[in-house]
Image 1 (tube, rainbow, N blue to C red):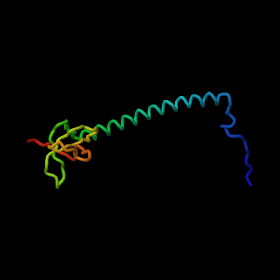
Image 2: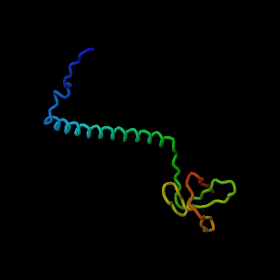
Image 3: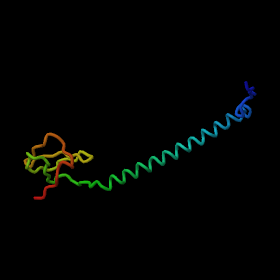
Image 4: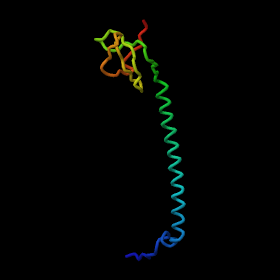
Length: 114
């Protein structure tokens, strides 16, 4: 049998409650700075990803009263844009001023040159 001398650990020996509170406050301040740095890094990464995505996207500029063709097989008539709803969505109407029942996105319609 080997005898073992049981002593308190160095952590328990050097622990001082008064200094512990100050060190915890200092760590909390540093933690806030680390959060801010991580937030800036995350924003930069998202901005770079957005920039790469937008480099490959070609926006379509369709204004009010432009003639457009809907990209579907059955419809071969031309329409015109009567209202821009936003985010690429447009309200269309036929050339005889009759409205199309729903909105159409700019990606599903092409500009028509007559």
